[in-house]
Amino acid sequence: MWFKNLCIYDLTEGFAFTAEALEQKLAQFASQPIGRADFTAQGWVAPLGRQARQLVHAANGTLLLCLQQETRVLPPAVIRDVLEERVAEREARELRPLGRREKSRMKEEITLELLPRSFTYTKRIFSYIDPQNGWLVVDTANWRQAEELTELLRTSLGSLPIRPLQAAVNPQSVMTWWLAHERTPADIELGEETVLEDPHKAGSEIRAKRQNLAAGEIKGHIKAGKRPRQLAATWEQRLACILDADLSVKRLKFLDIVQEEAGDREPETAAERFDADFAIMTLELGRFIPRLLALFGEEGQQPQAAGQPG
Image 1 (cartoon, rainbow, N blue to C red):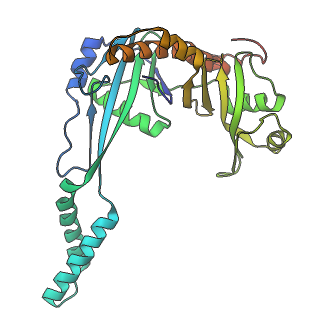
Image 2 (tube, helix red, strand yellow):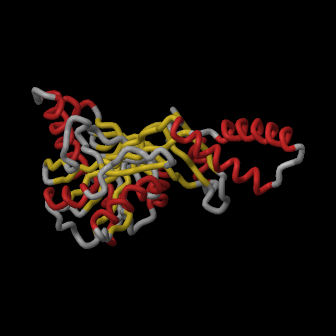
């Protein structure tokens, strides 16, 4: 159980639910088989998989949840082909052209007819609640998808006062300083990837991959006014990721040091391995997220001076 992306929320009023109380709330919105006439369906499922029953997995003081979304795949081209064929048959039979409303009704009927025979696509979104630190962490690369989970969680609980993680200092300004001066805090090492954008010209961006970010070409773009929206970085040689200016974390990887620590444990079952990996992951993120906030001056702090450890 290793998250690959992070969208992090502050629990602005804390989180008072125990694992048992949260389980009862989520059970009312547990996942159900998608209906024959439904395009989508969603609900909570057991994080440990099909063989498990509990909708909340408690470990290391955190609460793990899993949202399952099912979507029927019915390509518009399939509907269009069937519609054209049936319109042609009916017009030939009735010796008249069909009107727009008639075609629209036929399209609706065809859609309802084909839906039960369509394929379904299943997606799972994991998240965990850390009551002690006041975070809700969602394993997704974009905030829109994170909001799909938080909306159902809010409905399940009745209320959910949260806000996306915020920085007191513009992350782009901090990352720009790192690139321009070739200096980062001692525990941060830049990778070989960045996305630079022009803050005054929407859609203007440059993507650099497998490049030395200290090279003159990158500095030239910085001098020309471009700013990093995404920047590859490694923290303490324990995890690597893409830092985003919106404070999301993408393509998160737990490096060899962490994986070796996980490998030192010898769980006997898949469930025990899941639990052990999740515990290690939340411990690592429990250190990394505060460091992320400090880097970007959260709560009025100024960014850490380059070259100084956090």
